Image (cartoon, rainbow, N blue to C red; front, side, top):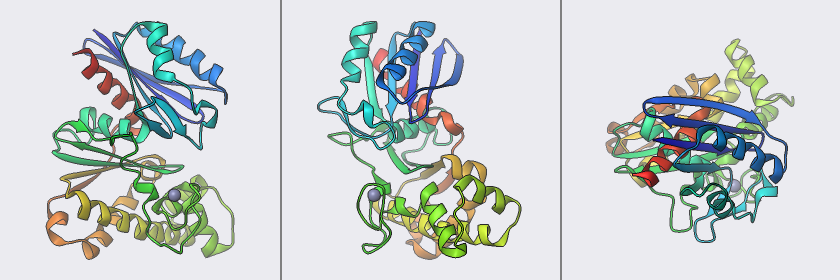
Length: 291
Ligand SMILES: [Zn+2]
């Protein structure tokens, strides 16, 4: 048996395939075009000859029309009947989910969320994605747009978000949120990677920015705890990967904010699959198709 998961992002396609017990993963860079993405997907699929294929894709994926409806990172894929194209091309079952949902299922199946009853997974990178797995089932909503935690409001009159609204959690808790927090503190425009490097070197202003960032993250976590009462929250993405202490900072603030009961019963962990959570999840979803 061979199954394959592919995670399609703005710059890279990541893949994870399994034959028997052996798992192979990797990533390839793509150009910003449908042709380039389809070309790489076909190449990867031909290497693995899977019996089923799972896809995680960046953006709002409509489960009813089976099309990507809104994606700031890969707008050129919007409206493309990807599932239909791939099923016809390879004659195998294909499942497509939003990338953050796929990441949650990946951490549930192969990573830090194993055996959890109610798992919420946050992917904290360019944007802020969310995913939910309850009793082993990925909950992505009737139209596939559940768990857009990044676009829940934490400050109704707050900063502009990339989605066009104001005061979304993502406007603060994302790489561009961190960059803005740092700019407000220092009047300097640095990338989130540069800010994290400075924080790791112990530079005061960068550490202050991350501390403020953790304040917003803890508010997001409080909303999650009060909504889902999960036993596990897994936090992945570039920021916690390169500065894991941000999770501890947020948890200590969360303890002060949240009801004690859901706080007591929730473990908050760093993701284990790094940048491959989504590819692992897409693969795990494809395994279910094949069974
Ligand atoms: Zn938003």
